[in-house]
Length: 102
Image (cartoon, rainbow, N blue to C red; front, side, top):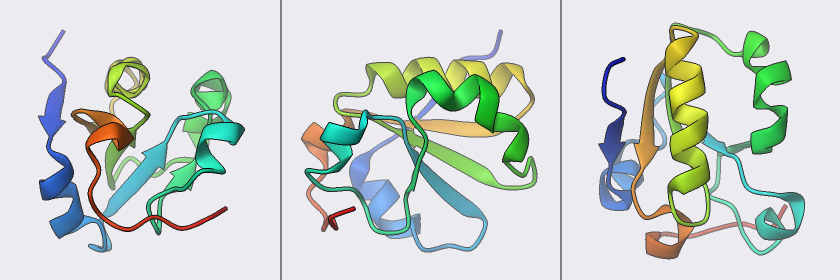
Protein backbone atom coordinates (compact mmCIF):
# COMPACT_ATOMS: atom_id res chain seq x y z
CA UNK A 1 0.00 0.00 0.00
CA UNK A 2 1.15 3.54 -0.77
CA UNK A 3 2.59 5.66 2.01
CA UNK A 4 0.21 8.14 3.62
CA UNK A 5 1.18 11.69 2.64
CA UNK A 6 1.72 14.10 5.53
CA UNK A 7 1.06 17.82 5.45
CA UNK A 8 2.21 20.32 8.07
CA UNK A 9 -0.24 22.54 9.94
CA UNK A 10 1.47 25.55 8.31
CA UNK A 11 0.81 24.12 4.84
CA UNK A 12 -2.82 23.40 5.80
CA UNK A 13 -3.21 27.04 6.89
CA UNK A 14 -2.19 28.14 3.37
CA UNK A 15 -4.55 25.85 1.43
CA UNK A 16 -7.50 25.35 3.80
CA UNK A 17 -9.79 27.71 1.87
CA UNK A 18 -9.16 26.24 -1.57
CA UNK A 19 -12.38 24.93 -3.06
CA UNK A 20 -10.97 21.49 -3.87
CA UNK A 21 -9.63 20.90 -0.34
CA UNK A 22 -11.77 19.42 2.44
CA UNK A 23 -10.55 19.36 6.03
CA UNK A 24 -11.98 16.47 8.06
CA UNK A 25 -11.63 16.53 11.85
CA UNK A 26 -11.97 12.99 13.24
CA UNK A 27 -11.84 13.89 16.94
CA UNK A 28 -14.63 13.17 19.40
CA UNK A 29 -17.41 15.72 20.10
CA UNK A 30 -15.89 16.91 23.39
CA UNK A 31 -12.54 17.58 21.70
CA UNK A 32 -14.12 19.47 18.82
CA UNK A 33 -16.10 21.55 21.34
CA UNK A 34 -12.74 23.04 22.40
CA UNK A 35 -12.23 24.41 18.90
CA UNK A 36 -12.16 23.29 15.29
CA UNK A 37 -10.52 24.79 12.21
CA UNK A 38 -13.00 26.96 10.33
CA UNK A 39 -14.43 25.12 7.28
CA UNK A 40 -13.46 21.71 8.71
CA UNK A 41 -16.02 18.95 8.48
CA UNK A 42 -16.46 16.96 11.71
CA UNK A 43 -16.71 13.20 11.17
CA UNK A 44 -15.71 11.15 14.21
CA UNK A 45 -13.17 8.44 13.47
CA UNK A 46 -15.68 5.72 14.35
CA UNK A 47 -18.16 7.16 11.83
CA UNK A 48 -15.76 7.26 8.86
CA UNK A 49 -16.68 3.74 7.59
CA UNK A 50 -20.36 4.78 7.33
CA UNK A 51 -19.78 8.35 6.14
CA UNK A 52 -17.07 8.01 3.50
CA UNK A 53 -19.58 7.16 0.76
CA UNK A 54 -20.95 10.72 1.12
CA UNK A 55 -17.52 12.19 0.26
CA UNK A 56 -16.55 13.31 -3.24
CA UNK A 57 -13.53 11.44 -4.67
CA UNK A 58 -12.69 14.47 -6.83
CA UNK A 59 -11.69 16.46 -3.73
CA UNK A 60 -8.47 16.35 -1.70
CA UNK A 61 -9.03 15.43 1.96
CA UNK A 62 -6.86 16.52 4.84
CA UNK A 63 -7.46 14.47 7.96
CA UNK A 64 -7.04 16.07 11.40
CA UNK A 65 -7.13 14.85 15.00
CA UNK A 66 -5.49 15.85 18.27
CA UNK A 67 -1.98 14.52 17.65
CA UNK A 68 -2.03 12.94 14.19
CA UNK A 69 -2.49 9.24 15.05
CA UNK A 70 -6.25 8.81 14.64
CA UNK A 71 -6.25 10.96 11.52
CA UNK A 72 -3.47 8.73 10.13
CA UNK A 73 -5.74 5.72 10.62
CA UNK A 74 -8.60 7.56 8.90
CA UNK A 75 -6.23 8.53 6.08
CA UNK A 76 -5.24 4.89 5.57
CA UNK A 77 -8.88 3.82 5.39
CA UNK A 78 -9.87 6.53 2.92
CA UNK A 79 -6.80 5.95 0.76
CA UNK A 80 -7.77 2.26 0.56
CA UNK A 81 -11.20 3.41 -0.73
CA UNK A 82 -9.50 5.40 -3.49
CA UNK A 83 -9.52 8.91 -1.99
CA UNK A 84 -6.78 11.53 -2.39
CA UNK A 85 -5.92 12.09 1.27
CA UNK A 86 -3.22 13.63 3.46
CA UNK A 87 -2.71 13.52 7.21
CA UNK A 88 -2.02 16.75 9.12
CA UNK A 89 1.14 15.97 11.05
CA UNK A 90 1.08 16.80 14.75
CA UNK A 91 -2.68 17.34 14.74
CA UNK A 92 -4.37 20.14 16.62
CA UNK A 93 -1.55 20.13 19.18
CA UNK A 94 0.62 21.74 16.47
CA UNK A 95 -2.08 23.98 14.94
CA UNK A 96 -1.25 27.67 15.41
CA UNK A 97 -4.08 29.08 13.31
CA UNK A 98 -7.51 30.20 14.41
CA UNK A 99 -10.24 27.87 15.56
CA UNK A 100 -13.97 28.33 15.96
CA UNK A 101 -16.43 26.88 18.43
CA UNK A 102 -18.88 24.26 17.18
